[in-house]
Length: 398
Image (cartoon, rainbow, N blue to C red; front, side, top):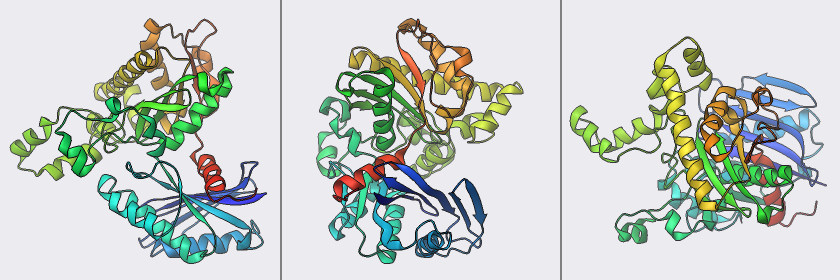
């Protein structure tokens, strides 16, 4: 058995799970938030308990140091020598990374070079990697990229109809995101429908504050909704998703803003937040909808319509579909959004089981026996995928 730490470092946070492999048993999990602020938040779950403290965490290094110290103090591990490997989620691997990779100086340098394509994510991942390197210098570390799963897309799928030189000079193309989640859920779906992965046709709807749709045929990604950056695709918590690019220049002209300022609004002040005028939190927008707020209802209707557009196009692309899967925070918990989406797909033979759909956060089939396409709630588990790849790439004996 081997203990693997799966890490997702953000600009001011560190999410983690400590797993026992190959059993994939979660020993401990949690998150460190508000790193760099006056008061941090450290949430730790282990042995059926949940503990929350408010330490001062000036940098990620102090966060990692406190995390490792706490694992010993709580007797979660007797010694740090028990940790056999550390796997890090990295959002953007560009075309350079075709698989997960062992961390070395060259890999870190390449992740830094790709920061232009993920400015909010890649720099934070590097900070997390270096913090763990400092604390556990002899433990192998592996980076697992959101983009790798999408590297199987055909050229006609990932290329934009822009000047070809932009692709040659700057790598302008579709990369996608949430690949680790899409891979896990599609593999799980194949098991649920009792079909070999190689023969399956799965559409995964990863619906969180960030959201993307993915077509997975034979276990490989053939298309996905996010593009060069996570701004492309369906409307999300704060992102607009697809729109006419001239909106940017038009608003620049009308409101005297720079292109960067408008893109920032499309990334951070649009989506649920911009349309509803209330919040980027689906629970708040749901409350508004239930109170009769037209903009809140419209917010969900616009998102559902765009999601169905992708599902229908992926149905054609794959020549059919065995299962549609809902995952991540909203996919797993928004009963009314799943209903809104599936009821728009009756033309494809989808038949929602309303009683089965009336649940949150559990794995379950939510279509009737008469439905020609089956639909499921499948809670995602990116950490398990990170741990599996860490064991594989670092050749850890488990």
